[in-house]
Image (cartoon, rainbow over all chains, first blue to last red):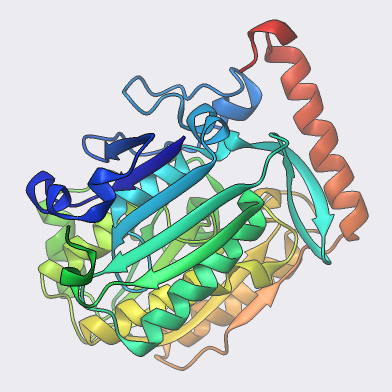
Length: 161
Length: 188
């Protein structure tokens, strides 16, 4: 299954080719409560977030899909707040335990498979921010144990149906 | 002497390590998790802002980013910005992306980026001996903030061998899970 998460208007999203992908689940990230940093999704109720809303089982959702597509607006070389919140609340995708990988400390893998993540960033992006985004995506791939691809959308028409 | 204000970017408000590190630098502290229009006015009046936040998944916590966007919309400009970032991993270096994002923010909003301190092993803020190293650099940062001087970006690791840090971390995770959890079958 392909999971698509985005922060666009529903109307704009329907125009894009992403909306017509087969075997996909689309989530528009909206009304998401901010992560409170309690670590309950690691230590008390593993896999389940203690905040009660639609995004309670994010880690499990990532574990179930084989491909993740992230479409986010750029804010200072980072995701938009809602998309970032989705990642904050899916840390239960990995285990809490530390492991040293390539000389740096990271978390253990929880699921056997390797996730493929495609990141698409849109909006006004400066050269410096592009570099930061590339670094961020690389760091995410190390922490989420995933294969990554990154694209910057400057012309939306290429992505319209 | 500049008018300094500290902004804590931790969702734990006044319990977490971000707040504790900030407390060693300034007394005027605003939480970015709960704030009101009065706090925004205070920020407007100040000339120096010290941000202190934890690292969440390689960059800023989402509510803190929302707060930065709010500051951008309120036209907070020409302030001296210092950054304290703490993370659960041992190497402070892993916080460099968050610092780059803060630099980008300063660039977009016309604020002056003055320097950052990234503290690896952030949760150990209150341990004897270990806290001496961050305290030393926090004092330097606070001196720089008071005199509006540049602070060279510093990435520090705790005063503790890495193998001990990560073994102790793993052990405490294991104990917590044993205490709290639930049988294996119910784990998703």
